[in-house]
Image (cartoon, rainbow, N blue to C red):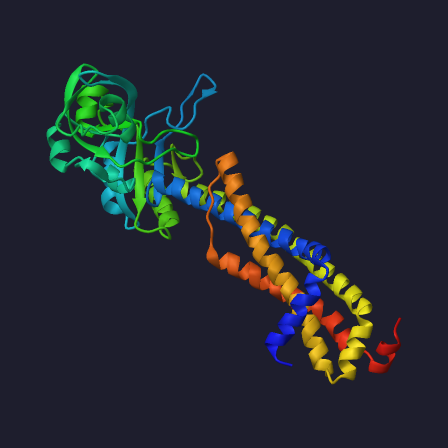
Length: 409
């Protein structure tokens, strides 16, 4: 029998019991819908984690000063200055796994334009800071080496500060702002970065030359660096090696004996990002496994109904065999019915899953990432489920004895 007439016969057989056919396919609908919805939400969460840590910087390491210990009371890292400007220079020039290194000095500051004022964070750094953070200007320019060397009174504004002081549509480049009462020229506005994993607004900051920061905003500690050092490794794979090189260099420069604790700390943000991504991947895999179980249950439902259908249509099978239908024709017809049920359930489930993912993303402000390959694989897998679980009932129908089938009441 040709495929087209077989498909028509299968369609008519399924439409004779519309409700039963729908309920049979419902398990597949739920399974495919759950797979697509959970994978879309899970992949969206993973993409958000990647975007969040990309906003922090490229292959970023943060080097912090040591801790205090006085009168039996211990402070955390950064409470005692142990990093020096010479340490920064050595990290920049002596380590092969390091691409950029920049000092990051921070202090609260009130910034004023002619009509508005805004309380924010002032950051003192160098040209390398923008390379480490992978941060580009949306207007104007970034800091220059000449600005740092001369201690120029220039400033680059974060997007939030620019909007608070000048409005969202005004270009502040060339305008003057006052920081702690001193005038600074705005030379650029940075592209928006968004929020950190802890909710900090990266764009709520102004960046000054580090030399200007130490003389005009917050006094320095002579040879000690009153802040942290941001380091960018030459590649993502070299981040761990850069961390080891930095630790070895600083221990040697600080004359720390073997067995003594470090008087500094190196934080590898790539490890945190990897842990977050791994957690999102595990959750996505778990949810997809649960959805796969739903598909399996749907397949068992198809097998059950097809067995019932074979029993109900035994006389019909006998009549078809009596007029010349071969066992393979009967096998193909029932297999086509099972495949049609599962594919219809897969297509409906795909639409349902996308709608559910969209509603969940809007309701709980979750990200959503739709992958066409996942939809195609899910529908294809639902078809495979129909074939696998429909094969036994179809084979049972094809092996019926025509005479016994005609006698069946």
